[in-house]
Length: 99
Image 1 (cartoon, rainbow, N blue to C red):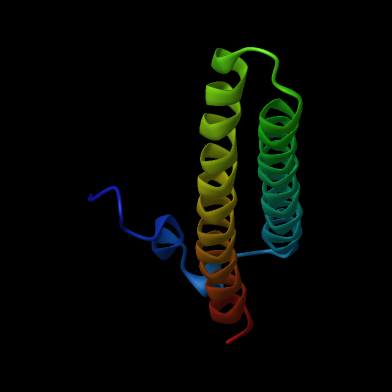
Image 2 (image 1 turned 45 degrees about the horizontal axis):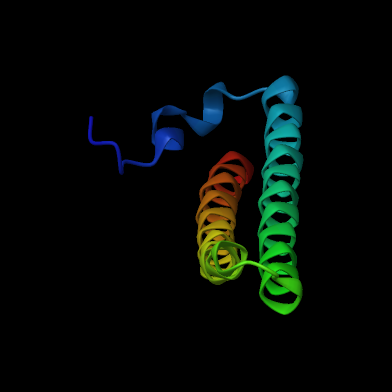
């Protein structure tokens, strides 16, 4: 199995029960919590970078600031892409379950 295969394809809708529906709900909530953790990290890195750039008394702090800002923005981009991909996978399972 490829690492890019949807892991939810192995479930058959007629074999899922209420506990599975609740597990899907928990998985959706876990996905949202993970997204928020990524978002918090990205914001902290960008703010730290801007602070280092603005208040740097040493050149290495300013360099650290110029590294933190793009890293924070990259983490933000990765988090949005990952969240949307996982949400579509999870909702796909829910749709198959309701059929």
